[in-house]
Image (cartoon, rainbow, N blue to C red):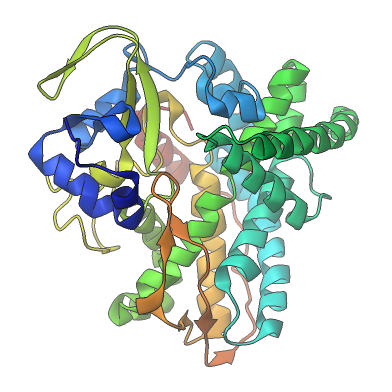
Length: 417
């Protein structure tokens, strides 16, 4: 029993705190979290790939109260049915063909605004957050909603999902945002029914999903689709700011920013814990976990497990990070991982470093990360020496070989691309 764990320790440094747990045993009961915490790579992967033992279905969960019952809180076959519809928007080829031009247009427009602010601008609030919000708005089928509104909706949903204290003001804000989104979706449903656009809403309408299912899964994408790419952009720029040689190599060969993206998601997972419930008594890591127990698979700890990754506490985009758990694993692996790889690793990071010569954090040593289940930089003021025009590479579809290789990787990780 890890009685010494406190929320304060987790907020201050989840990696050191959970790393200490990991090196003593793979599974612990943590009273402060009222759940069993899984800390080693293999055990976390087991939890995520065995929904028959560790179910995503949890009655009365705050996420359900916040956005409705989406696929994230369902197991197969219901989960698979909804996931299949969303995958038509989010699979590798669809992202490359349909969405990359959208991401590039959004990034070009927002980067021009960012440059106008001059050195010292906040990369998080002035570029990464609005870019993520604009991309999500397009993906879910609400392209004309201002990105400020989408960001506000997402922040409200995140507050609801984390409302352990049951603060009534937060639930009132959640209800108001749900009403706003429902009104917007009512109009959008009619539009995509007449003119399908490949968005998540459009594919769910085409698949005949009930209105409540459409709404819940669009809200899921809004809730979860902003923090992750926003934090990936800011964390990557922060990490490269103190690693001059890695920064130089990535700038010289922009395709390496895809490896930068994968490594930053391994090293600093934007989502630090996956919640599950046991369906029966199960022994894991030498500890008996009873049926109907709450379990948390710690991605912060698993992705830095030295049994899986050499020098796991170090950021190194040369490492083979294949199979890291930053996107989860199994049936519930993050549906938006290819969106993240494209929008951040192929578009945002190469564009930033190509346009803003000498880009670096203004004060990398003073950067402050917040949160532990959802961890990232709230602000990152940056400097640059000069500005150049960015000419994106011509957009192309992935080759049949690239699609085949990608699908094999995803199949090995337990989910269809």
